[in-house]
Image (cartoon, rainbow, N blue to C red; front, side, top):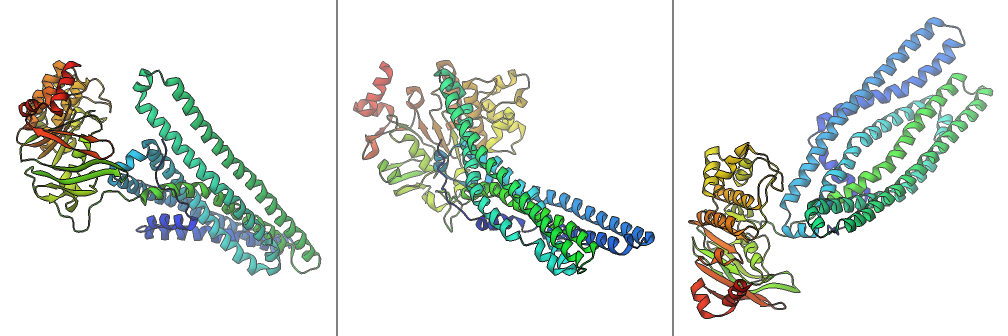
Length: 590
């Protein structure tokens, strides 16, 4: 499925600024990390100087006591560095997990607030890849890359200070290849950024393909499409492989290049240092110290350069994550939106025009009104806009023109949560969660006590079959329902709606996927559910709608959008012999 999230190329600094925002509130932990990093940097700077002093002052002079003291001091310096290094590793690990938890929480919370239209355009697999795989890449940046970068940077600063304090000329010779290394790093980083961006995109496509096929495996087997799906997956899998091979080849070429440059610098230090020593301008100990400093200098430089390339993978992931976080919901509470009071159930459409875009109008000039407690059935041909009507009541979409009002409140003027918490839905395809039956019934009222759960299940005609299961209400279900039938899943959804006790109820083809015998049981549960509630019922079966207080027939031209063709009771509409009567006759003859 094609990913529709806006694609924008962001700079590294832009991504880094957004990542750094997650460090707010962690100042004490960051201070402790900086102290430990400073200890490590001090140890890196002191050790070569102590080695040089041992060579010049004690080894040549045969001073065993002085040499012993210097070696003990050197051991203490290394222990100090070890404590600093290990301590900052641990604290950075804690810090990275805190930041990653916060980032994933922000992503999931933001996804929950996005409008339905967003999910129709974006595959669940790609969104999961952003939440899991891309945040993992950022987590690596927070933990490993950040830890190594800070440690290397502090060590590098300490070594530079010590080098220039000891000898300026040799310091300049040591860092003379540094501009070349920086240029090489920038060259490889530009190439690797594009490569890693492609790996994240390819992984998102692969995840979307996998999610789509696993979700629809029954349909794939029913239509004997598994061979085609295997071929399609193989193409996405190959694209993911190729993207990762290309990214790895760039990274593989970078490291040997940096090794050659650092070796060249060591050769220059040895050669020029030897020349100065021969002329008596420096001591042998200073040359030995600088050879050690050269190794300590270029080790972090190499590490920083390598990490800079590796960080491109995290920045590519950060692009995808922050593109998602920057996506604004199509539907949001406007400034000053108020909570709607307890709903009586009066719904009114005033000359409503709606389309998913201006070139595709679905509803055109729809006006209707319901009284509190009234059951309204919506009928019409497939695609006429029945589901669109009920989606507009819950403000899952906004109208292009006109108004949708609930108890006199324009749904655009009230908060979405206060409106939707007073609405309930029993969908055509009953949805259950991987949890117990009791918790599935509690979904709309999580704190409901067990006696209310049982009462709701009893009213929904579900209690008997639940008690026949080995674990009763504690039976664990899969997302697909597990050991319960389609009709039983529908009864559980009705029990869920009864427990939530909504004032406005939507029934969307609630009996379309079950047999006639089970339909009678479900219909009895629905009759219980409809009591004292305003309900909008979408159905094709006559038994579901003939007892509705009012039936509204929706239809019209494909180009101009649908409107209300007829409305009235079943008897009235049959007597008119119009569109409704034609629909019923077609159903009865089929």
